[in-house]
Image (cartoon, rainbow, N blue to C red; front, side, top):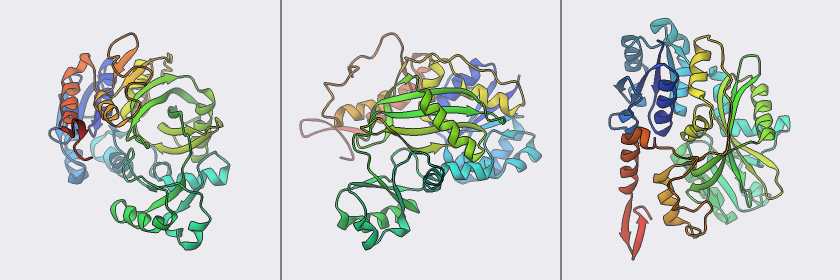
Length: 379
């Protein structure tokens, strides 16, 4: 039995652990102490560490547990494993299941990705480098716009600016907190929003795909999925593969693509690692973590049968959506529909109830009763 180590916690680690366990791998997790993913029943062994601890303790843990493959769950761990891929292999015999560092960095840097799209004619929002924002360039922009860090997760650091007079200051604020940034056109009516997951092999073939249509997300102006459903969208899969072919990217990638009011796609970003909504692919028949592990081990890649039409809820985040959205009682499907055919939960569900409960408790702690109703504490 081959041993796979999930590096980094969070909801994607809960889903990845279940998928690897079901595929017959001995499965471990390296995550910060207290991370709710460590309570998953699908794990065979656990290690406790943080990204800031550096590569040395992780290498020791990999060596001591005879790990065959390491799969990152976050951008920072993906970068760490990619940059140290040869060292990991030489000192431990473990394969870091990540793209080459050059390909990974191009995919992960949102500004460089937009530049690639502009040069190659891939559909994307109009984008301006943060350092190029001045009185002259501001006059040429159409407002509102979004200020976005070049490297970020979810909606962190994204600011919507409606007043041209405030743009220069907002760029400076985002840069000071998150590093280099860019300014991007705001796509009016940018719905629906899709997560397009694909696995590209070394020959350039799409081994498997899954497409999630985001029904609800939080924060409301654009954030992480709180409810989504799996769908067929071959034109979006084809677009994602064209971008990966241009980069020379091999492995798993997750695209964020939205549609304009005219139905035209716009590539927003690529996540070069599995997303928190990974379970949506799993319940629709596609075991991406098993694909990643098998490819790293040099084993034949199994093409799974994709069966869309599944609904995935992130219940903790969906509570935040409910408290914030004016459509809380008008949403379809109904927010209060907790059970039924083809409804699944991102946090683990009843099959893996411990991380589910711990995730819900963490979100309950963000809520308080104030002004006659439940509100998020940071309101």
